[in-house]
Length: 202
Image (cartoon, helix red, strand yellow):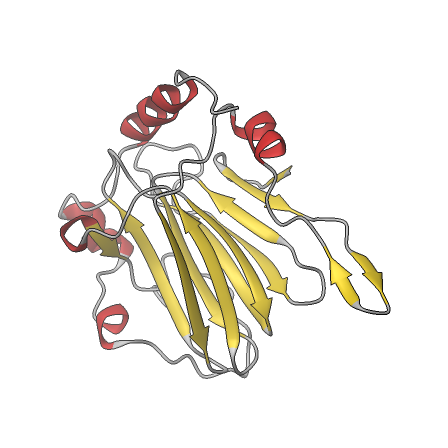
């Protein structure tokens, strides 16, 4: 796994084995994940979303603790996947990293608790699957507007963004911070240390 510019975010670039039947690759390896993060990925929920061209989902995050870590890949089509540091007090607060995930390279992205996640579908039927460390809990789930100029995410030009009503009404980064929605960096660091203190699953 390759560390991204935001602490707590990694990209996996697997080796693909093609032959006349198709192809094979390992999109998650527990040992490699453990070497990068220092702990095991706790799997509580697996999600799949299908989006048409231009759909923009996010920026989503959850209260910490416990937060919700995500391990994401695109199994059909292509997306621009974006990790946003929403941890107040972090050295990279409000910075973002973008990684193209598609059916050709089979790359994957992991983001730890406290980081925000968003993606835009670059094709029709963009199919995204992701593993989550905790289950969906509506009262603990939040969002920041993905088009907030203070974030300045460089979404692809020429693609009109299609947002859900909920995402379109999400607060700006400044408003989310002012109202106390954003996780603190200290709380996130404590959560990571707690995870590293747990015994490995094998």
